[in-house]
Image 1 (tube, protein in one colour):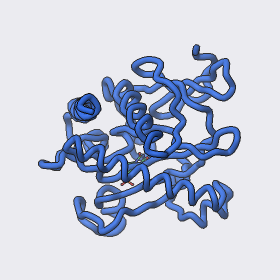
Image 2 (cartoon, protein in one colour):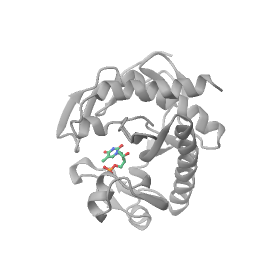
Image 3 (tube, protein in one colour):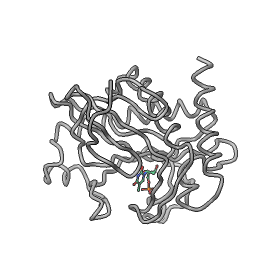
Image 4 (cartoon, helix red, strand yellow):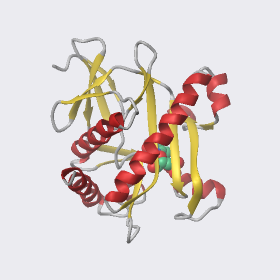
Length: 240
Ligand code: TMP
């Protein structure tokens, strides 16, 4: 399948049309941003890692009962995906306090929750992706009540799968952000990506950060962290 015209360029990916109106090609960039685009940089090799990691995880999630947009990996940076209309919600699941949760609720980073939390933010860069709840989402017409229930159910399934997958890699899944979309027939599927850009992943023993927080917080060793987390994923997959 060939790339036709570019449909969209986001902060980390480009999206192209194909000859099939139901299929798109996503191309992952090495560009990194944080704080709603205020901080900009490059993480060399990130596009390749995020493409492959997201695809490996989505293929497994399909088997675990979560439908996704994944169709076929075309090359190191490009993947054929089903065309979706993105539900403009960032769906965030947390197992351990960190980042904005720690700041907003005064809970020290690393505090384990008794049970996972879910939160939504309205995807709108101009407004800074404000937090919203399921009633706001339905009231604003971002999704229906039925859709939000499906999204919640899939999000916790994704958490169950990812938590145990990363545990096998010696990694703690602290939190993550996912997005969903609607196929042309209205079916809700997992879309966007699952990568070190969108998850907090800590080494189980040392709690060393192996994700984009190294870039957000200027901790150094950004590329090394992305390579380390990818090699742990590949070792785990090979061992099966
Ligand atoms: P937060 O603690 O900053 O709210 O982030 C929660 C999780 O969501 C964390 O794993 C990073 C991810 N995330 C994104 O993928 N995109 C974003 O724009 C933000 C703010 C967070």
